[in-house]
Length: 461
Image (cartoon, rainbow, N blue to C red):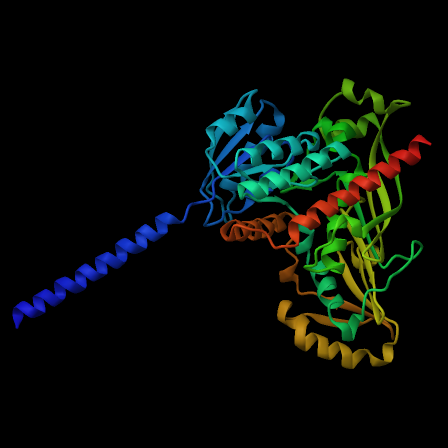
């Protein structure tokens, strides 16, 4: 009897040890995502690492040329590691050399390349990475000219063959007022359907105002001089507009494949932001304009084509997108966003002006206010409250209501990088993107490049 009990205990211990061993072996099968940051010339590269992720290895492999951009990246990571609240614990493996790209590809110490820097080089980096079987996580825009767009299509083809993912960082999908606008537009009782619109009154409008001088992570942002060179950064009509074109597709045609044949460019234009030498000095820290910017100097001031506007038709709906760059925002303000989606029952409007204390605010303007209360109550109970618990609606006038989103959902632009990254990590785990993402990325860049070509043609005439 004692022997049988002893044997039973041994069997249980053995069983427990086997389960523990199996669990350890199973954990070892889960390969950590290993990040390689290439040529981090833009502060967005560091913002990806402002948070840590359990499925990501804590060592960042940095490959870059010697220069202030790489040092700024390393400095920001150091700040995140040493901050008093929720410090990160990144370890840096520095590889600073002139042959940084070749070294990254030969070392292959990671499985994901992060790139945020000179837009002129980005698509070549992406193409070489996917050829080497690396996943790509890239700041926008992936391309800034027609030649780059052709390379992008090739990169997606190779990525599909190699079984790797290319993904651009679309932070604006996570902005709370944009999320709420999208959600409300999907409730027929409140919004109805998106109207077709016209070139004069498009069905959907997105406008973004940015500033060269700003603060990031509490520090004045020092921009490299090449940021003002459209040959390196790209013109405004192919840069920030990437976010806005993406939002048009994402909100108006949620989880639908949008082909480039669904897009017809109607009109597009571009114009420069003019900076004085003193303003340029303040934002770059340089004493004078470098030689490569002399082509854009007129009467002693820098003219950089950072502004652009396009009106186009997408799946039968008219859309308008515009981006404006000023030198510095007025005191107490910052970058701003305006958007309107016109529905058959109401318009959903995001404003960020003085009346809103320069904070993005969503409004609903009803065409027939008499039926508002019943429709809204049903919509909130069924849809909106689930995603935004505590959301409120404040009457401004008979036909206008303000959507009050709880502060806990307003986490700010920098924090959105972690949200996008968490999504990307899920896609890596699944081994694929949603079916609509790749074709819609291609269509998004087709749209910006078509606008660029049209705007340049108008300038040449």
